[in-house]
Amino acid sequence: MHVEEVDILIIGAGPSGCVAAGYLEQQDVHIKVIEKSKFPRLVVGESLIPRVMDHFDEAGLLPALQAQNFQEKPGARFIRRDVISDFDFSDKFGEGWDWTWQVPRADFDYAMTEALQQKHVDITFETTVTAIQFDGKDSLTTIQDKTGNSSQIRAKFVIDASGYGRVLPRLLHLDKPSQLNPHSAIFSHVKDINRPEGIEGTQISFDVLDTEVWLWVIPFSNGVTSLGIVAHTDFIEQLKGDDGTAEALKRAIKLSDFYVKRFANTDFEFEPIHLKNYSAAVSKMFGNGFALTGNSAEFLDPVFSSGVCFATESGILSAKLAHRQLRGEKIDWQVEYADYMQRGINVFTTYVKEWYTGNLQTLFFHRPENPDVKRKICAVLAGYVWNEENPFVKKHDRVIRTLAYMLENNP
Image 1 (cartoon, helix red, strand yellow):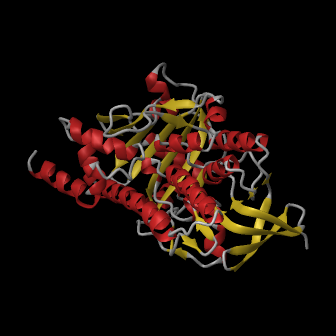
Image 2 (tube, rainbow, N blue to C red; image 1 turned 30 degrees about the vertical axis):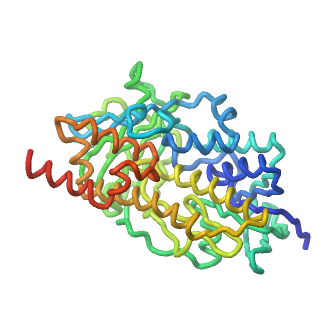
Image 3 (cartoon, rainbow, N blue to C red; image 1 turned 45 degrees about the horizontal axis):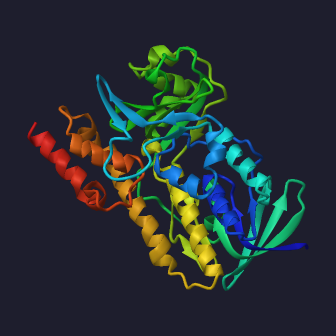
């Protein structure tokens, strides 16, 4: 069997794998990327947050992405009945990007891989990992192409950016139950024929239909809009009934007083996709000779669009550490990688949990607003969840609950 030798093997060509590859290509590291899908391909995760712009910039991918003219996202809007909470990323605590994009992921991911291939990064599509063996830090990965032919790749390090495929967690038995309650989603795209002019037509919104039920509306620059319903898994199953996913999403749209006129009679561009019990976790984020990134390691919930942020944060960090390790440095992967990533994951996990308890919604929708509190929460929503100068990061485990209690008991 043919054996190819590389310095670093990257499994997956989504945002995590692409920023890792982009960074390593700039360091002249011999890398190979393998991807099981054929691009462009449909995938969820269409709402980005500003922190990811740092990663695309550092990976050398920003110019290629800017050329695509994706819909700019200067903030996010949360709606609950007649109360609207607008977050402006330019008005947040601390430094950082004040905008990002709303993207059809098929086009977005394809643009990244095209940019990498133009830089002569070796990306092999429609190829799956069937086995992996580790000998110390060195690994031997068996892959199979779309014709059924198998070959092997010997690498000094493996970055698993396989997303929902969770290649190494599956092969190495690293999966563990998520600490979040089971939620599910149904989504599709529509031609937004009733899109209003101006900011109203382009603004990303989350319409809260009930404490644990919300509709996402993500307009793209191509005139298409992504619509999705998120709820406890039991609610989604009841919404489906015996009619399937399309009828369930239509019923969800009719629950929204804000959006029912805009979307009630539009046709779906594809059969709505049902994502069931999507939250995931692992027993460890790294091992001797490998690191897990993005959804391969942990996926929380789409309510604050943290998925791509964790993907790119972990992707570029794992690439930097692996590169230093190849140059002979001794890396403390627990401290520099796992503990660091876990701090950010813990912050967003708190925000997701407190969203579904209703405590965070109390802060969002209480009137009058507190501008200082809003700026600090906005920094979290922008993805700057490692900035512990922000008390809403540093004290995340108690500040939301405490403030919500005060507001509810001292209206």
